[in-house]
Image 1 (tube, rainbow, N blue to C red):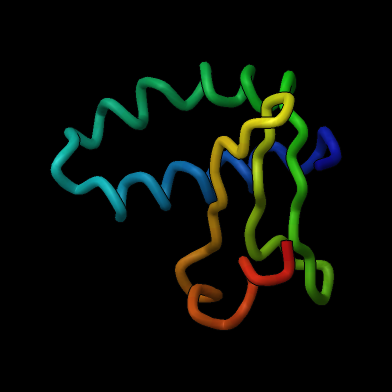
Image 2: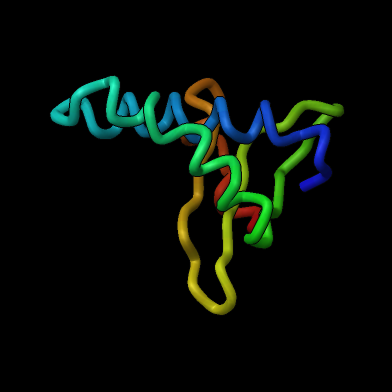
Length: 83
């Protein structure tokens, strides 16, 4: 991930969590967004880009896969298989 991509990656993270965890209050994810952005800076983030569009990302903290997130419109199209 390039520093200029953090907003797009952060939005993918937020939208993914809002959709996947509807049982958690929306404000929980929104209130933690800035903290997650800081954590992104300390992690290795690998973005999947096609036609100059970020479709998803995988985040690693040392040897731990912290998560794989794919934009909703690209899910079930093989994006995560590319990691």
